[in-house]
Length: 206
Image 1 (cartoon, one colour):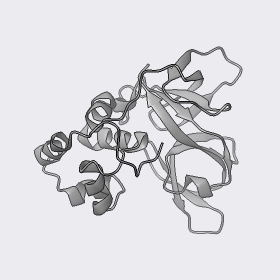
Image 2 (cartoon, rainbow, N blue to C red):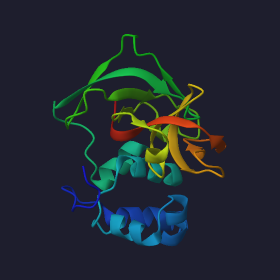
Image 3 (cartoon, rainbow, N blue to C red):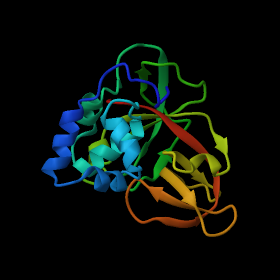
Image 4 (tube, rainbow, N blue to C red):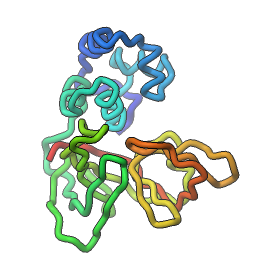
């Protein structure tokens, strides 16, 4: 799904602008909180660029609203269809830490678009945390990409060489081949050695 094409469902632009105004946030200030440049945010709000699932999550975070409301207002389709079957093999905690048990029995959920054969399904279990707006949603992650380059400014599942897995995104670190990880919530992780990255490709309610 491209984020640069005209979306099939229109964003409720005025609703988003009203939400920002109610919180006394200018578009420039909101763009900074969303890690976007102001022009990109304007394109999103004007309906000229499709809002990605991870961006909807960031809006939910800064507006402190359920992500289900954000995706509905943004015209992001998250349910319907029977095209992709995904087994949920673990969960993501409020800190962003992922707990994965590939051999454990898990629920099988449907997505409206085709998923990669090796897609990973995890549920957000983030109640009573700073990421409460994500609680209960099912995330689909795409094929594994080696190294950390793919995680730069992209949200997904990051696996470090220590074996720990986190939901977040990465920035270039302060030494060659090392990265700074921005997790779902909590402190930045500096000098991270990233083994692989799986991009977030879908999100739907339970």
